Length: 220
Image (cartoon, rainbow, N blue to C red; front, side):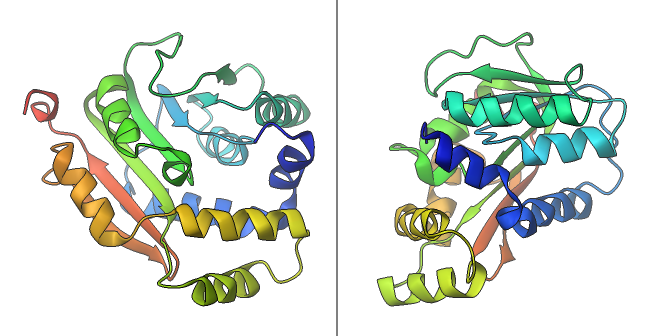
């Protein structure tokens, strides 16, 4: 998503409900967590969620990673506008390539609507293990693939009825590229994450993978 028009559309208010859903899920799954270290966001887009987290948790920092320069530009602009540039930092990178980050390991890793963009979904699950501290808190949210194009179109009409055509087209493509619950369950098992992370419905059209990693997860 290197088109500046796309990045501007994702940075607008049309997807606020999705961004706030992620925040509600974070509070639901980690009610006692008040991050004071650094959160890593993989596939941050225009950084709508990192900026909300930094606003909510004044003692935390967020390192935002995305492959799109246009998305990162939108994030930096919003961070300056909200006076959060000192705590929300941006890094361009594409998994599974090595990410040049200030930290090797993170106590909290999040990802929203990123998994379906990957040609190999295992890249994300392996990245969680590679960049996480032992017992790190993990929250991954993404779309679920409908059973048919007709159902996918109904989802778009229901959730984005009055949004720009570009966003509607993107959501339709994303739904087609998304995974089913069974496929995500198999991915977690293949990454040896099925015993440490939980899989649940986050909304009628989204799933959430959440929990804390066990210290022995990476050695399994």
